[in-house]
Image (cartoon, rainbow, N blue to C red; front, side, top):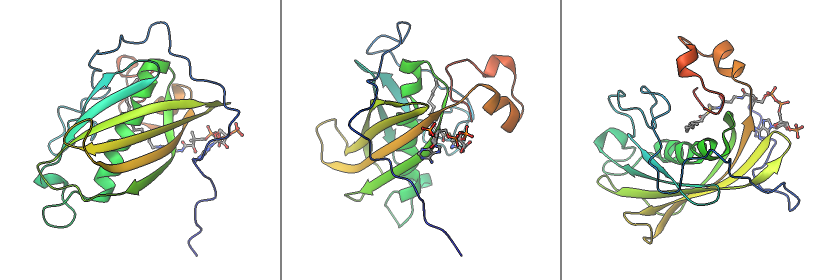
Length: 185
Ligand SMILES: CCCCCCCCCCCC(=O)SCCNC(=O)CCNC(=O)[C@H](O)C(C)(C)COP(=O)(O)OP(=O)(O)OC[C@H]1O[C@@H](n2cnc3c(N)ncnc32)[C@H](O)[C@@H]1OP(=O)(O)O
């Protein structure tokens, strides 16, 4: 028997407000790839999303993802799982502004419009707040421009972890690859 998820990414009204870390990259700073082989942002990944993300004001991140033939589900259209990956990546980028290592606990996605190959999605993520180790966030992707039609929306819960999460569960990790604020699965 396959059990359905038991949780929700809907956030309560009494979250602790997000706090931009004093050493967060300034708004407008292009965030570096956190891992060269990452399917979301890694420059070494042969068919990855090659996403570029940028720090915004408060605890926000924007990003772009250009859909190619490598990302299709139906002919000429982006695969839904790939679109969820794009949302995961831009939401994960909030770690840079919070300087806390986190992993995705839950990612809820609404698919609102088809996304054709050749589209450049304009993605945005915002931290909503914290409840203990849980970081609640929302994200969206618009077709081609930051004021284009909304194609996808997400609500997510990331869970703050220690760096040992990556060194114990990951592979080939070195001290240089794991920083105290980095998501590096
Ligand atoms: C800087 C560069 C960045 C650069 C940008 C990086 C972008 C990378 C984007 C990709 C990110 C990923 O894909 S990360 C990879 C995908 N995710 C994973 O592999 C995570 C796999 N899951 C796990 O490892 C584990 O289940 C954890 C770590 C999430 C939780 O385990 P744990 O540490 O034992 O903690 P646990 O006690 O269970 O939970 C702690 C608290 O979180 C809550 N919690 C746990 N799971 C969930 C959940 N699914 N949904 C809601 N809430 C949850 C619990 O209720 C609890 O709340 P309370 O009772 O304390 O209130």
